[in-house]
Figure 1 (cartoon, rainbow, N blue to C red):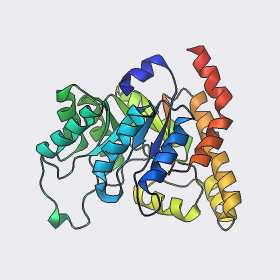
Figure 2 (tube, rainbow, N blue to C red):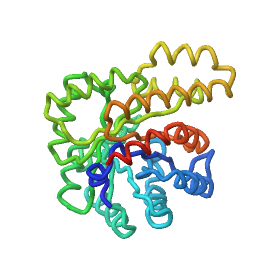
Figure 3 (cartoon, rainbow, N blue to C red):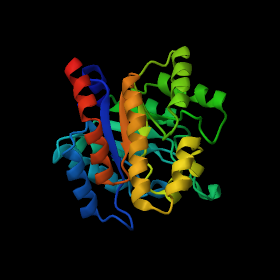
Figure 4 (cartoon, rainbow, N blue to C red):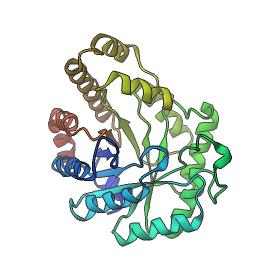
Length: 293
């Protein structure tokens, strides 16, 4: 099923993101993570790249397992910066062979040394969206940034998002954020721009203070005072920080669901236990919405 059609059948959707093998997780361990996450019955699972767009081939392989072995819709990340159309076509062909119908179209990160970057056929995510929609085989999602993209200003970011949506994006998944009020303000701005496609909120449970500070510095996401107090208080107490971080993310999710969010996308960082605890905490809320449909 194409993910775009999920939003017409239920609300909110619940989905997870996993990342491919790295120095911490072997392929077998990633598969074990997926098997355990599948037991939580998400609506779809997305597969990201490694750092700098690495492990692209693994993305297709892992997405295939999710779709064809776990029987859950898979959302494959696809970056385009510096890519030739022939490269993209090869990946699309592999996705189609594996029954993958959903792609998250992303620009991707520039190489640290831009002098080594190929020109490629795509400069922006909207270029990739247009190309994918011309193929008609995929449901295409895009990314959005409730606090604005770190490479531009708020006004230009909204303008670029409008172009991406008008290019054919079916749904949007957000970068992480920790302040729901900022998200609601951003959602109101999108309504004024007549951006009415489904908005999925990306939530990352805070279980490692050092890691989250690094991530927020890279993506430009702010840490609210309430969360900062948690980090400062429990930074050297991993068990307490994990408990508090899960509680904070759960509170965010409940508030978003109650405020009619189209979907929740949990950045799991391949931590199954964290995802399980959050899903247990919202199971009755999720059930109530499913019964109302």
